[in-house]
Every structure is written in structure tokens, then in C-alpha cells.
Image (cartoon, rainbow, N blue to C red):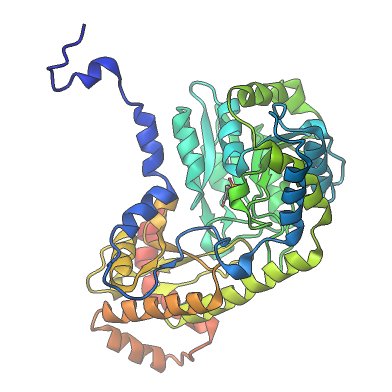
Length: 461
Ligand SMILES: *Cc1c(COP(=O)(O)O)cnc(C)c1O
């Protein structure tokens, strides 16, 4: 029997699961908590949160009344107070199959759909289902840390491939080929991308599918930002290439309908050849869900109405708000010397900008930048290090426009206050090279020229 007088007595009863610590260290919310702890309570100005990915608190990003009504009706019928079957109720699964089939050259069935508690649970489930001892998984860098956390929790070896900023954040497919081996269980592709705002062309996605086919691995296609695009590339779902390579399509209503708190997502088997069925993957998903949980029955009941009846107008309004916010963001960033936007996002709700610490006198890296910015300006942004890339910053622009403008002007004065004195010289050089404020190309060239050394060092490390 253990002695309770012993200071380390706790250890005799329990031992913590160290893997869980690793997964919170990697999390966005854990990092934002640390950054927020720097806030100065004496600052009278409102804190502006540009580190999160949740626009729903802002009145301009209120969901459609169609969604509100659907939920109200589901409650009032009194018919959805019971447990839902594992994987979801049939009308909900059928409506997700129909919703996704609109974009596919084949028709999905309700049996291809498994409802989850948001896209986060979809990621957890699919990684757990595919995992086996000694396996590895290919994950993008910069990426979405929940993949890393779930892979770590399943004892997988994580192999990162780069997204290339100079190529509109396309996947470095040569790196993918070099990283994969016979124990690679899948490649994760996030499109439209968080954090980079990439929207891949049909041609690039086809190359991804061809590569995965050659390597004999399925694609985990995270399309939680599906259709949230505002650039020249339209959204193409990976499942379009489902007959070339098996695809797990992950999604949710969180982002497109601006209701992340409703927790309704899905895993969809987009594999018309039936390879995954042959490997009994659908029943493994069901077994996993059997010991996990379901989204609330009430939201499952509302889903068919939401997916079928939301007006185009609602989506168009969100897109035009995001486009306007992004334009403001891009214009303001051009005016801030120490950060640069290498590629303007075409989708999602974020910009990734490169931080040039060489231009700053007392900022050591991206985390230091974010901590001091919170302290001095009450603006919260996310350091790239959480996403796998040091000295980058992720700025959310899905927030009301006045707050966004306010935040950017605070970031600008922060950068000016911390600028190295030789910035004067650089400004002269900028005039000498004919830089015109507002000219995107030249300002990019300027930033890149100054920044090549640190870029190579940090991005490739
Ligand atoms: C937000 C997000 C998720 C999680 O979506 P939920 O439906 O809120 O669980 C998954 N993947 C990416 C890339 C995201 O940005």
C-alpha cells in the first residue's frame, strides 16, 4: 500500500498521460491563453482578437435566419430529445451526401457519411481509425495544429511537408514523394487553407491526387472552409479525384454558416471504387464513434433544412465582407515595414505574414512580437511557431471592419515604436528605388530583398 505521508504519493495512484501535454503545447488556444496573459488591464481600449478563427461574436457575421429557424423548429417538435444512432440520423446523413454530391461527378449515399462533433472530431476519428504502430502521417507546414496533436496522441510519426509561399502556398510535392514510405498512412490537405488562405487550382489538386495514388495512400481532405473563397481560383473539392485515389472528405457547418458552437461536422468517404469499404474502414469509423460521442440530436435534426434552404444571398454577403476585410488588411500591411504579405489569400479567414525581426530593435521572434503587441496595444495575433513556422504571424480578418482598421493601425504604431534606427536609411532606399506607397509589387520586392536571409533561415529550419 502507498504511504500518504510521502510527498510523491500521488505517483503511486496515478500517472499523467504525457501525450496530452504534448497535444496542448501544440494548440492554438493554449498559445492564445499565454499571449492574453500579457494584456495590460490598465489599457482603456478594447482588446482586439485577431488570433482566433471565430467570427460569430461580431454582429456582421451573424448566421442566416434559415439556420436559426431550423434549430427552433427542431426543438419545438419535441422529437429530438433522444439519443441519435451512431454516425448520425438518416435524414442528416442523406442531406450531407446530397450537399457534397452537387460538386462531384458521382453521387454519394447516406452510408458514406458519418456525422461528428465538428470537423475537429472528424480529424480525431479519422487519424485514430487509420493509426497503427510504426505508422507515419504527412501533414502540411504551416498547418492546423490539431493534426499534429491527434497524430501525437496516436503515437504516429509526424512528417511535415512545406507549403510554398512563393507558389501561392502550393504543396511541395517533391518533398511529399521524398517523405512517404510504406508506413505512411495518409496525406492531409487543407483547402481552402488555414492558415495560408490558399485555394488550390484543379491542376494542382490533380497532381496531389496523382502523387497520392503513386504512393498508395489516401488523402484526408480538410474542406472545412469549402466555398469560402474570394479570389480567382474557384473551390474544387478533392473528392472530384475520388476515382483516382480514395479521399476522406472532412467538413462542418462551422465556418460557412458561421456557427462553430453548433458542433456539426462530418467524415465522408469519397471513394467510388470502394477501396476503403473493402478495407472495412467504414465499420472501423463506426466502431470508433461507438465509443466516442455524437453531435447533439437537435442539431442533426436541423441540418437538412440548413443545407437545403440557405439562400445564395447569405453566402454572397459573407464572401463580400471577407473580401473587403482582406483588402483593408492587405493595404494596411503594405504600410507596415516589418511584416510582409507574400501571397494574398484567396479563401478562409486568415493572412500569413512574414515577420522581419532584422528591422526591429528589441523583438527576438514571432512569439515575442505577439506577447509585446498584446501588452502594449491590446491586439492579439497568433505566432507562426504554433503552426510550425517561426517568424511568421497569422492575422484573422473575419472581424468587424472598424475593429480591424483599429487593430492594424495599432500594429503599425507598435512596429514604428520598435523599429531599428537604420530604418531611416531603408526608407531612403525605398524612395530611391522608386517605391510608391500602395504599389503592391514593388513593396513586396522591397520586403523580399531585405528579408531573403532570414526567410531562408526560418522557413527551411
Ligand atoms: C476550424 C477548423 C477545423 C475545426 O472545425 P470545427 O467544425 O469547428 O470543429 C478543422 N480544420 C481546420 C483547418 C479549421 O480551420
